[in-house]
Image (cartoon, rainbow, N blue to C red; front, side, top):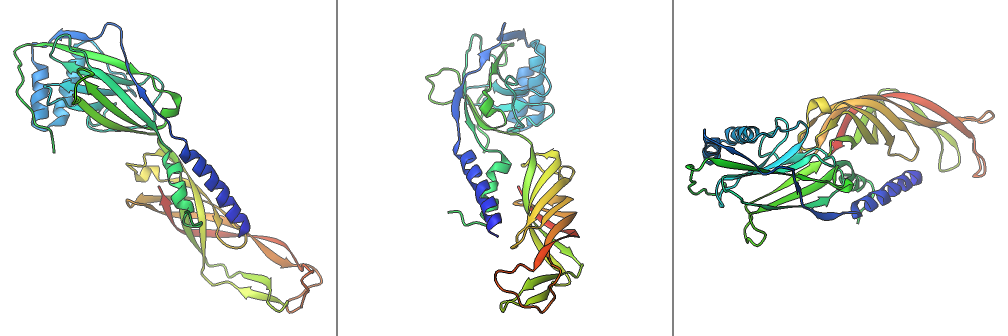
Length: 354
């Protein structure tokens, strides 16, 4: 038991050191060459986008914004994040994101690269410049974030905005495109707060949003309870120094602290059964060490996942040395045992975090 506590305390020290290192910085994107782009929107796609957003049909509105960007001569790249502001009016400028086929109002990123985050500002006002900044805050990964609550199980540890009218008689439309450069410490796990203003001195922003940049996770933790029907016994020394046999229950409930590796990376905010298949390793929470290996899969139940697993554990048990027998009395200086390794098939349930 002491060995296990030292093991968990070691992990705890690592977790605290990881959690204490949090960086924050402000990033300003750089304009792309030959931007802002300009075209004559004779079909009034901009006005159509405005009406769709006003009616609450974000999907149709965002498709019109994509059409505007294409008409301006810019092609959106796959696997690239574009934070888009549609400046319909000063009081109605929706902000969202284009990323492959994701919803426009989705604020989830899955690990940035150095140069795959852009800002696009679409407006009908000529020569309007916008000030945009991103406050980026690093954060621990989901597996790091859930390590302390997991270890604490074993160790005590201390409405839409209103819109005003818009003049759709002027059809010239400008598309301003800028690119962020993301420092390494913010690429995998960070919160990105985007703030856009027409002028730096404006009291109210034109648009603002917070984006959750969290890499997909391969790792999770859990508490696994396994059952085996093997009728084993333990040979131990009783209180009076006599070697005795201690039977185990016919259905031996065994509890393991488990670490899981998921074959398919997991989006911790949108889990699926397909990403729940995992390899599993664990250590039994008893006075002796009993490692476990297996495979499992499960379902998301909100606060935790419930998984089933099948595996095999190895138990380090006692076997009598030659010359000793059950019922013999031994002194404190004698060691009548030698190591016996025995394996057991294990089947059961696991409560997984995250």
